[in-house]
Image 1 (cartoon, rainbow, N blue to C red):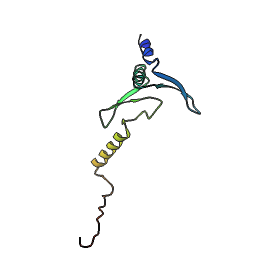
Image 2 (cartoon, rainbow, N blue to C red; image 1 turned 30 degrees about the horizontal axis):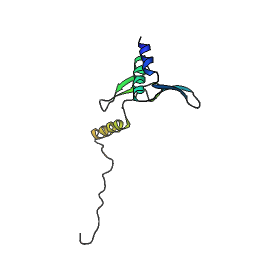
Image 3 (spheres, rainbow, N blue to C red; image 1 turned 60 degrees about the vertical axis):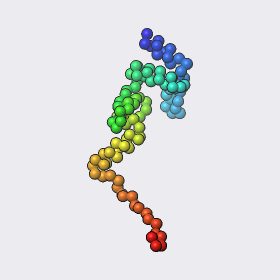
Image 4 (cartoon, rainbow, N blue to C red; image 1 turned 180 degrees about the horizontal axis):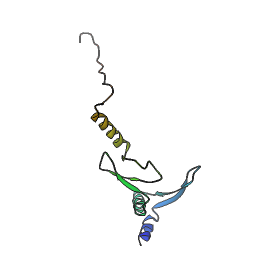
Length: 109
């Protein structure tokens, strides 16, 4: 029953393809937002995706075996860099150099 429900949801909303030059891989691409939602649901139900909460913000993101690192901790590069800056600030190592203020030398100023 669940398999039939997923098949009906994915039908017409995704397209199958083969990618890669050396190592061939089957891909299933959504045709739009609804297709992406159905594909995400199918991957979650079949256990092909793992979900994790970002270390820096409350966002949940999907980990899949085909892409990214299995020990990924951040949902985006922005969160990764924000956490890095927080760690540096906490360790007392803010910016490595102070910004230099450049003044204008004008006569009579």
